[in-house]
Length: 167
Image 1 (cartoon, rainbow, N blue to C red):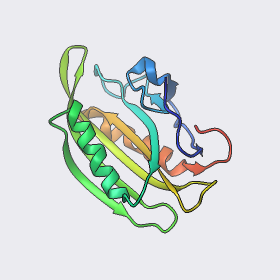
Image 2: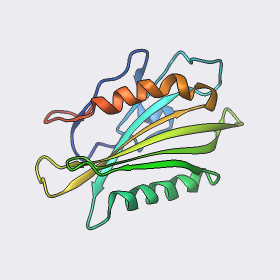
Image 3: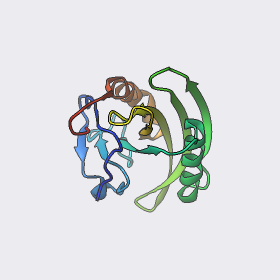
Image 4: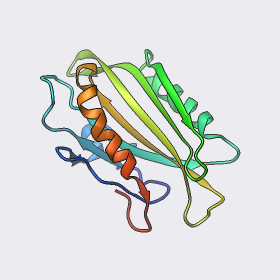
C-alpha cells in the first residue's frame, strides 16, 4: 500500500509522464510515482519520479532529515555517493536539493542511476508551527538525465500546498 503524504500538496505532472501504482513499481513507501513510458534513449531503466514525505518531528532540522535519508538509501545501495548538495533557506519553504549516484539492479544487471532529490520543508496547514518534509526524487540513467531533468524541475516548481487530496 502506498504511503500518504503528511500534508496535502498539488502538482502538475509533466507531459509524456504517466502515473503508476507505487506498489506495482517497487516503491511502496511512495505516495505517488510517475514514469516516463517512452525513454529518451534506448535503455533498460525507466526514468521515474517519486513523491513521498513525513513529518519533521522535534527539533530535527531539514538537513538532518536529508542526511538520514541518504543513510537509509545506502542500506539498499551501499555505493550511493552524494555528488552535489544545495541548501535554500527560504522563509516559508526551506529546501535541500542533491544529486546522488548509485547502482541498482535492473532485470538482474547492475545499472548506474542518478537521482536528483529535492526535499521541501512545508508547514502543516492545520498546525503551522509544525513542518513536514516532502521528498521529490527523479531517477534516471546518466545518459538520459539531461533530457528529463527539465520535466522534473517543472514538477517541483508546480508543487503547492493544497487543502484537498495530494497529487
